[in-house]
Length: 282
Image (cartoon, rainbow, N blue to C red):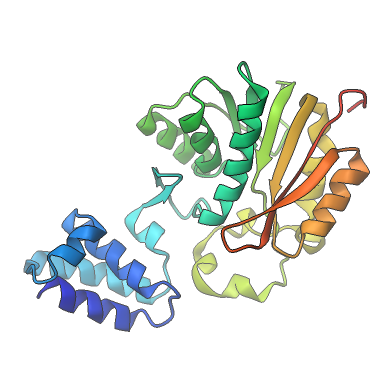
């Protein structure tokens, strides 16, 4: 069977996916060890029976709703190939809005900085920051052992030095005076109907769902972060697109200044943050 024919069949089969063409390309590229450009350049290329069989195995899993990232065991984030597993969230392009803001702050603050990633999961945010600032003293905390092990493997495979620690938010952390704290915490309300739809059905709910309308973990982080921030340090939090005002209110009430929100690639409010003043006790 030719690439073009099999690709079209896959697209027609993935009717429940909002990215059917991309899903088909990713599965074909994985089996053929090629790029998406190759698929377009050589559409008449014949697949071997073994390759067709492997694509079919992947396709059946995708038809059942399993995310392509879990099927292939890898997802690209910030141009970094990251191993993923059902123990972690799948890194999403929306989170790059947080990375971009963090990089801007790091660029403004100069050398000798220390940053902290809370609930690191695959290590996506921490490793993206290290890829741009190799000298950055980067800490990453994660409470789930399987996720922490995966993040460590990603860092080792990419050759990045990160201080990983098993911790439920700040609970096991003894370090202080971070110039930057970032987090993509659970922020979905347990009653949200989207939890029963699409890829999130396969992702760990402990990394998605939070009490108090999805704000419980965000509230805890905001409350405790000043104890670990240096004077003038920043806290940046990813959140749901309808939570921006609530998160800004929490930041302002805790005493953060310069509180603002940044949008994701789709123009939705996605990341809010603030600066901790040096004259306020944590």
